[in-house]
Structure formats: C-alpha cells, structure tokens
Length: 363
Image 1: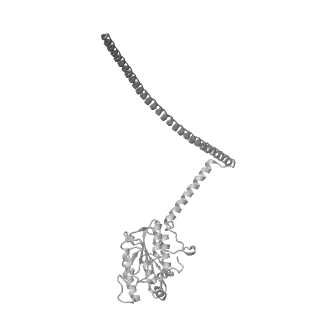
Image 2: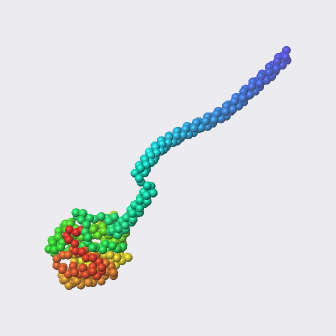
C-alpha cells in the first residue's frame, strides 16, 4: 500500500512538472509572439509616419506651387491688361495718323516733296547748330561761371581773354584801398572789415570775378595775389594750373579774395618771378594794379620812394616776364603816380596785350 502511494506521488510530481513546463512554454511562445507583433507594429508605424510626412511635404509643395501659379496668373492678367491698353492707344494713334495723312493728301501735299523739304530743313538746322557750337567754344567761360555786374551790364573791353594757360595777378597792397592818398591813410587805421569793404578793393575783387567768368571753359588758370611778396590764391595749389571748368574752385577762390585785407607796399618783380614757377609757362597774363611798384625784390632802405625809383623797379620787374606772352593791364590809377598809365600802356603794346583803365562802376 505504501509502495503504491509512493508511486502515485511520484506520478503526481511528474505530471505537475510536465504541466509546469507546458505552461512555461506557452507563456514563452506568447511572449515571443507578442514581441514580434510589437516589432512589426513599430516598423509599420514608422513606415506609415514616413509616408504621412512625405505626403504632407508634397501637399505643402503643392500649396506653394499653387500660390506661385496664382501670382503668375495675376502678373499675366496684369500684362494682358497693359498690352490691351497699349494696343488700344497704338490703334488710336494709327487712326489719327491715317486721318492726318488723308487730310494732307486732300490739301495737295506730296509725300516725296515733303520729305525732301524736311531733310533740307534738318540740314539747315544742323549747319546752324555747328555754327552755334563753334561760337560757344570761342566764347569765354560762360558755361563755367556767370558774372554780369551791377544792373546786368555787359561791357566791350577789348581784352584778350583767350589762351590755354592764363595767369591773373592781383595787387593787394595798401594803395588798393582808395584812389587818394589821404583816404588810404584814413582806411589803414580803420577796422580790417571796413578795409575789405572799401570801394576800390571791392572793384578789384569783382574784376577778378568778371575775368574768370569770361575765360575759355577748356583753359587752365592761376591767380596770384601780391604786395611785397606773392601769394597763391589757394596756397596748396602753388605752381599748379587750375581748370576753368571747375566752378566750385572758382567760387572758393572768390570767397578767399573777399577775406584779404590790402596792406603793405608793392613788388611787381616778385610777382613776375612767381610766374616762373608755373609749368608750362602762361600764354596770357592779366595784371590788376593801381600804380608802379614801390620796391624791387627787397624792401627799400629809406622810407620814401621817388617817382624815378618806382620807374626803376618797374623796368627791372618787366625783365622777369616770360618772352612773347601778352600782358593785359587793368589799371585803377591813384593820385601822385602820373607815370603809371604811360608805363603800363607801353607794356601792353610791346607784349601785344590790352590796356584798360575802367570807370568806377566797372565791372
């Protein structure tokens, strides 16, 4: 009995073991199947998400393309409207011209004759234009700068305003303040601002402005101011030629001249020596002064200068001028210097220049 009982217990244990193993196997199979399903599901989800993203991108691109197409269609519609409007205007103009042609024909106009007549008129106008252009090239400086003087006056001066390299010498000595010695002494003791507004000096500055307005546009120029020593109107342009066509430079020089206060004696020799620093040499010279020089290269020993001494300084000065160059003298004579007019007139004649002693309202 006991033996059977042991056999039965053994059988029970074996059966339980078998059952346990079977259940474990089932669980294992279930886990394997479940994992496989999860993997397949994840892969399927990733594929589907990729497909969805791809489709979304295609939709976005399609929408953008649709917007571009709509814009293109709008542009095309606008161009069509503009083209239609232009075509309408062209048709209207053609109809107008056709009507005009018919009216001209009805009035007896001949096409060939009219064309030849128009050609002749065009040739005549072209010829006139060439004459005007030629005259404009010979006319001095008007396109570069304008200066008319008070009351819009114009003057026939006889001055030789031509040349390629033109030098202007402006006397800035104390005698340029007034015509009479007593007035010069009076003004020398006044405020510099009042001295710069003196009538004689104002006329001298206006003379330079008038000259620069008449110079040929294609020419070069330089302005040298002088009393006992020469100075360049624009210090950093010493020895250089400036272009007449540079209007801004002309205006700047005009402004600089108004700030000069006449003072000191007169050395014409030093002024003419300054011309030698210009390269090439000037081919036309303008001298604006009021009398013979009071010294040569250096100051005189005494405080007085006689008329004979002044003529001697003048004779030595003109020896420094470049040969064969016209000297145009604009003289504003002062009292007590009677030999000046004769000497400067002779200088202008000998150099084939011009001599001008202007009235007080010139330029």
